[in-house]
Image (cartoon, rainbow over all chains, first blue to last red; front, side, top):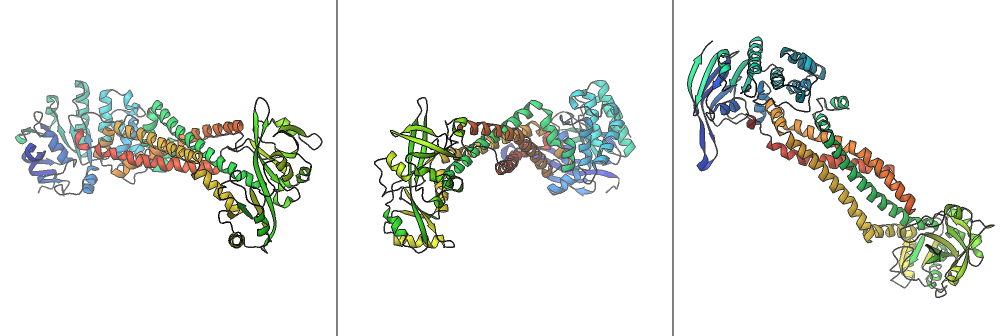
Length: 231
Length: 390
């Protein structure tokens, strides 16, 4: 196995439902992500993109096949192991999913505090620093309600990256944003990923993002049908 | 507050921030908890005062043993006891003295309002059986138709009661006779009558011509110093051949009366239920607030779950919310509860009021039941599945 790979999935099959309604969502998916790479996963809706993301993100149990994430096998891993692994990932969702009651800083602090043994002061400084990196130094004390859509998604990016994750999983992070904000958020992800050596897997429909990818995977009906390397 | 909680929990006080984010809902939730507290305070206050009021008349007398009729549950009810049993009891070497105690209600018709006195007829020659604060006035009762009045009686004006002295007695008509009050004592209205009155046994018998000196309501006995009360009680039970009589130590009689009032009489049961309902109301309110709050934040919780927070974290957040609600709702509940009890005490002259022990008990109960509601509310957390976020 390649030492440089963050993710190595082999022969991944997945089913939803039980009995008669049981339907196969993924067929024999192989996928490898190199450390520091920026990969885009494309495909029509229902093609299984999200399923791949939730399996890699330790949010769903692997049913068949092998997924090695950060040199740990996910197939058969315990719930506690999955939770521990999730702390080393960064998640960015289609909606920003910020907590409405927490300020920008406090939201980002939640991304630090998940690692035990971090002092309040350290977490706070890290959060302020991360917000600075996404260009929101002047918005640290704002509640999400007082931020624009693009700003909220940038807070979400800061929250995902503040814990220095090995892998960032982003699910259509630009879907709810206008063109400029979308470009800004993706550039941010790409730039910060490159600076920190973070691997990024981004699911999208958005063609505007493709030219920033190192590699583009196309999924159709649960199968990877096209692999395009641009690196 | 936020900093205090942050230091306390060692993390962002999400629960606190979440609760206070929606001010209106937070205020409503606190009002709900406070309301439940007030409910419990008032019911408990009445129950406690019922206990105090029940035990109060027992403090007017001093005795070691009381002999009552089989159906006498309190000082003021039940049949008569034949005086011969007093003489019989005196045969026991440990019994040093005895006194018949007469009890009946005397209404004082004041035109606009009656005052009903629970009236005790006692032997004015036996101050040893009378409570220390009344015993000094006892010789006054040797005068026919003399009385010592309860100055805390409901319906008796304060200055009116204060004016009663041997030099300036208060005469009034009752039972077709003129009763003259020469002194007062601090009785205090109960749930039965408006107040108390002490008269001599002779005056009592002339107020109630149908009663006989040979049949008092209770027999009080004094024992030799150092005598074993329970042993004497046991001996008297064999000595006195009427098995229907209740022969008890005076202290036991008071406690049995209290227990009877609290568990057998409808009032005691009603207020007991009142407390239970208050607790249930509080439980439901806190549960409702917390489970709505959890439901409203399922997305955020799911996000936190995806980020790697475990179930202990969420339980902590909900318990934090429960504690905030319980502690902060208790304060207005205590203030309003104290006010209501004080006002009610003033109006009814019942011994109503807030006590430290009651406040502590209700506070602990509030925190415990809030936490319990919180724990029930966390069951909804299972619905926060991070896989649904994508």
